[in-house]
Image (cartoon, rainbow over all chains, first blue to last red; front, side, top):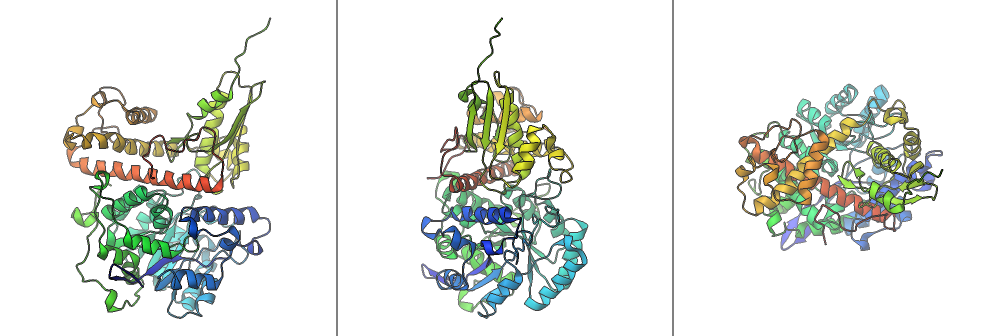
Length: 351
Length: 246
C-alpha cells in the first residue's frame, strides 16, 4: 500500500524475479553467456537512481530477506507476481524458475502469485511439465521468453504451430494471462527478433487469453502500439519503461507514456518493477508523483490522473489475476480515461 | 619509378565510420560511441574495434554495422588491409570471421539464417523515414502550418534543415521519391501520396515511431555508458538528431 497526497494506492508488482545468477550456478562451458546475461541486466540497473545501484555480486544473488525488504517492507508492494525465466543452457538450476520462486514464496502466504512458463520446442515433455507446474503452483499466468536458447535453436515465434499447441493446452489448464518477453535472437536470425506481429496473430486467435507485452515491446514500441490498438486482449507491461526511463530519461519517459496512454490507454497498462533489476520503492513513489510535463511538445498527449495511476499501479493487474482488493483502494466504475481504440470509435484499421 | 600512393589517416578513418549507422537507431556509430578505437599504420593497415551497449545486442544489426564499417574503411584510398573487430559480444567470432571472409550473413551463421539482411535494413530505413517525417513536420505545424496543407507540400517548399536532408537521403536509399518536386508526405512503402483521411493516423504513426527510436537510443546510450567508462572515437555526448534530456 502506498499513500500519496491523501490517495491510497494498492500496489501489484506484476513482473518481478528471484534469481540466482552467481558463478556457482553457471553451466560449465557456458560461463560467458551466464556472465553476459547478468551483466546486461546489471547495466539496466544503472539507469535507475545511483543510490539504488547494487554491486554485481549482490545483483547476481540476492537473498530472500533482501527481496522481502526491498519489495514489501520498503517497496510498498501488496502482491507480487513472479515471472520465471529458465535459461537452463546457461544456469545449472535455471536462472529464475517457478520452483525456486515457489519454494521461497510459500513461507509468505498471500504475498506472491506464481506464474510458470513453457517452451514449445520441448514438445510432449514440455506439455507434461506445464501441466505439473500449473497443478502444483496454481499458476494463472505464464511468462514466455521467445529468445531462449534451446538445443541449438535461438528462439521461436508465438505464431509457430508448436506454440499454438501450447497456448491451447495452457488455456485448457486454466491459464488466463500470457506475459511475453522478446529478446535479441529468434529463428531465423535474419528476421527482426523483437517483431511483435506473432502476438497479433495469437491475440486474435485466442480471444480469451490476455497477452501482456512486457517492456511494451521495447525496442519496438511503435509496432506494439499499432497492434495493441487493434487487439482488446493485449496489455502493456511497464517493466523497463518506468525503471529504464523515468529517472534516466524523463523527457523520453513522458513521451513514451504519452504514446501508450493514447494508443493503449490506462486500462491496459500494468506496473512491473522487474525486481531485482530495479527496486520498486523509487518506481512506485516516482510514478505516483509523476505528471505529464506542461510544455508545448507534450500538449497533445493524454493526461494521467490519480484514477489512471491507481489502475496502472495495481487495479488492472488485480483484475487480470482476480486479486481481492479492499474497498478503500477501489475506484468508481467510470473513473479514468479510455485509450485510442475507444476514442476513435473503432479499431484503427490498417495501422 | 615511384608511384605516389595516398596515405590514409585516422581522421580519414573516422570520417568513413561516420557514414556507418546503427540501422535501428538511425545514427552514426561514431556519435553513438560504438567505435572503441580506429588506427591505421604507416603501411595502410587499418584496424577498427567496435563495441555495443550489451553482450546480447541483436546479432543481425551487429553484423550490419561490422560489415558496413568494413566496406567504408576498405574503400578508403591508401588503406591496404582492413580489420574490423566487434568486441565483447556473444556472436563476436561468427560476425568478425564472417565479415573478414566476406561470407555474408547466411554463411556466417550457418543454418541459423535463411536470407541476407537487405529486407531487415529496408524495414528499418522505412521506420527512419517515418521518424524523419515527424522531425520535419513538427516544426512546420508549430509554426502554424495547417496539417492539411502538408499533404500538397513538396520537398522544395520545406525550409532547409538537417532533418530534411536526412529524410531525403533515407528516402533516396529506399528508392522512394526524394526530388525537389516530390511530396513531403508519402507512404513509406509505396511512395504514393497520403490521403487526407489517412493524415491523422499517418502523423500519429510518424510520431510514435520517432518516440520509439529516440527512447531506444536513450536506453542504449545509458547501457553503453554503464558498460564502458571511456568515450568512443568521435562520440558526441549529445545526439546529433535528438533533443536530449537534462
